[in-house]
Length: 227
Image 1 (cartoon, rainbow, N blue to C red):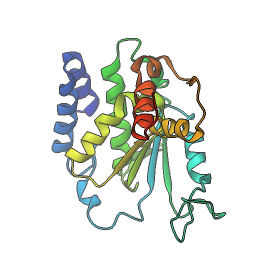
Image 2: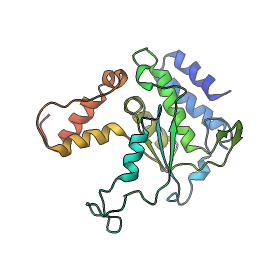
Image 3: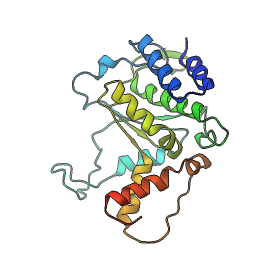
Image 4: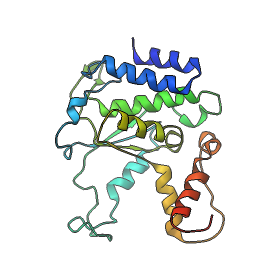
């Protein structure tokens, strides 16, 4: 059964864990990664350093995050000490960017009562990046490299999917780092060092999730700052 059918059936059941169970069941049924939204776990054995980094968003807005990664120069590449050295920190890395324009924008799903469908989309985005299957000009190919890290370049997807994906890669025993943009934004607040109100420009879904106040308060609290 296609993943989308399994996941939609799970989401209508209304149980949050049913979605996770459906994803795991689909992956267990297709361990070779040849079916849509599956991946071959054996490709994660050995040295992963040459694999690309995956970045996804619901559209093209996440390209600003990709641009930031491509131009970031916060560390010395040879000594790994803090401080720029005139070379981008990720200059030797490759990236794969996925923009789910067929289902954009993600920011409205939660408000419309479709949080389970939003979580389904986030799982599918991540699994696509982990796998090697894609379609090009109507032809299904299986030569896309898997990724060694996933950057969720979407506030809403971070709010509703970061914990899911981190738990999933741990459950699947994958040495894959998963990061989201909200934590980076919270650290940016900490680095400013300025007191006063904090403004956040975000979608309805991101605002309703409360992810920014929680993450900012947690980040400042860990740094010994009053919140």
